[in-house]
Image 1 (cartoon, helix red, strand yellow):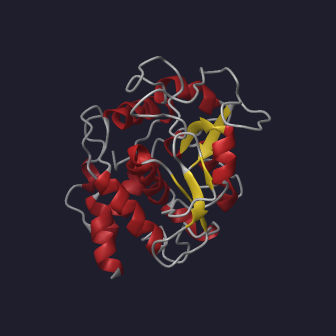
Image 2: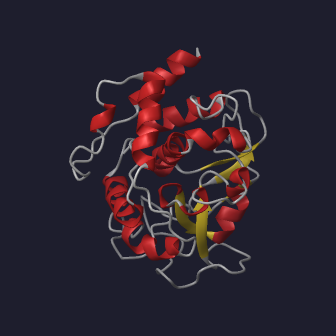
Image 3: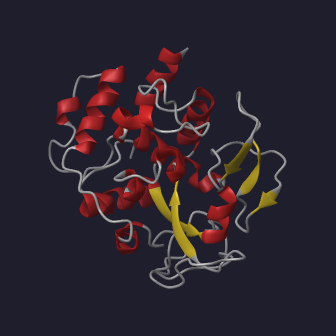
Length: 259
């Protein structure tokens, strides 16, 4: 079972972006399975430049500007973006950074798709832009440190449709957060990146019903991995993610191999 899951896992590695440096993934050629994942982890670790936590806000104008929906230059916030109509609110880069908040639209901050509590807010994970997104502070707070999951009966719903509630797939039935369909693949690829980039450190992290700290090759607990692989398939790589991956490389000199 675990072998078949992992074969699907590494099948997600698409290498579709032609703007990567020549030969960036060449040493992974011919590898499969865990050997491929491990080699990719080495590739995206080599040359990585650790940036400060504050530098995330400097990166976001390049990595997360809305050029794809309203094309209005606002922060592209996956927790407030409405892909089918008007957004409930917008943020401008560098304006209304959290701070305190009481409702949606008050301010934006930095959402660790893998909660920073799981790695004790340690560097370099805490400032790695490839898994940290600019999002509304209130929604980020409501997501808390919950896993991403499938929510059937939400206890809270954000203005763009994100849901908090008990997970209803797999072996975990606790609290979770389900984003809107438009960004499920984006989030899945952030987490797949994280467990590949930080494979050698996973055993020292907390699980949080997300990370598989006893099987670092698999990286994610099985129910979460299955769900994220489904999201990856249902929501393929977008132009937004390709642009973000290029900008992230300019910022910290590594890439997400799932994009």
